[in-house]
Amino acid sequence: MKVAIVGAGSGYMPGVVRGLLHRADDLAGTELACYDIDAAHLDVMTRLAGNMFAARGADFTVSSHTALKSALDGASYVFTTFRPGGLAARHLDESIPLKHGVVGQETAGPGGFLMALRSVPVLLDIAAKADPGAWIVNYTNPTNVVTDAVARHTGARIIGLCDQFIGDTEMWADLLGLPFDGLEADWIGLNHATWAQRVRLDGRELDLPLLLDDLEVPGGGATPWRDPSRMAELAKALGFLPNSYAKYYFFHDQVVDELRAKGTTRAQDILAMLPGYYEQVAAESRRPDPDPSRERGGGEHGEFAVDVICAMHRDEGRRMIVNTRNNGAVSSLDDDAIVEVPALVGRSGPVPLTMGPLPGPVRGLTQAIHAYERLAADAAVTGDRRTALQALMAHPFVRSKHTAEKILDEGLAAHRDHLPQFA
Ligand code: G6P
Ligand code: MN
Image 1 (cartoon, protein in one colour):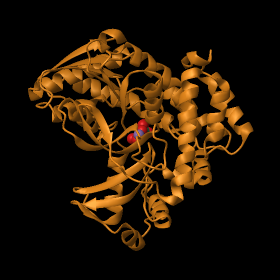
Image 2: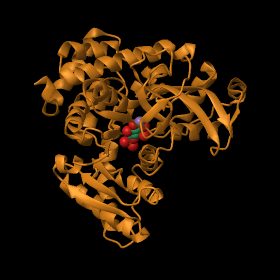
Image 3: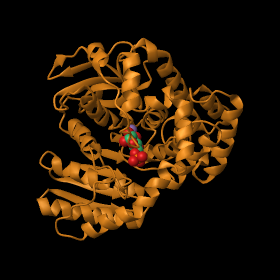
């Protein structure tokens, strides 16, 4: 079995290697074809992987590729995990909307839209070059827009990943005073816009409204990914659990003020720590039993992706939350929408489980986000400026046509080199 890793020089790669070690017995004999456009980072990560596998006696072979086609040839799974344009482009995505009073975020809103315009052409190229029966296992953001574009505009098979629900479920366990082990929430909706009305502990349904009535809103504790105070406040109002990104919708203007006051973008913050991070990983990669930093992608990120590949390869039929075609699973969204839902993942891909409608208070919001995503995917494929403008006008963050136009014009100009479809 061959797995291609596109973006293997990524800072998240040590976590992927740890995930592979975790399932080394189940994937024994697998060839990992590592590809990246950054030859130096690719070199560090392939050496790291080789030494970590050797130290633990894991039966993987690692090859290094700077040509995409040779990495993809013969691969049954193509794991895509890269940021097109890197963090410099992410900085623009985060700062251009903010100039116009709109939340600047990597995946949500106009920032995610600009990222989609860059990601989709690269994914379409990968889909065209991959072997016909291959599965694309995609982490590249915005994962659902990318998945939608590839699913509707190519013949390739694709599954969209995000590990958000794991960290979110962990946060809710903490807030509600429940053990994380054995806690299962039915997160449904769209990537970074999911909601959970049903929660079980060891298979037993919990009375969520009651738990939320008793919940006391904590102060502080926010990280770059999660703001437990706002999440608790929202959940008490809604009566069910929101995904962490709900703060961008329900506290939009306060977040704009905070991002402006902060002064640096998340991309700049990461860029500042990255040289030290790669230095540590490079030093470890030369040691016989490397222990690379967990500062990037150190959580469940890599393990989750490897578990998905395992579930398909071994036909496990395992229940996992993934992005796939709706087919009626969420009755409030189009059948052909790419939704994030619990699914049984086996050899023939994910089979979404029937989940019913979205909760009333967020039904319209989620449908609006879907309308935006569909237009964003189409704009990213076709390079049609009018569709692009419509996408931005459809997004709940954007409340003025002129704002949409300004963000679009600036975004297209700033990212010109990564947008061949708009040339
Ligand atoms: C979460 C999201 C990912 C996103 C990441 C950004 O994990 O689910 O989709 O890429 O956060 O994290 P970063 O540390 O790069 O800001
Ligand atoms: Mn995500």
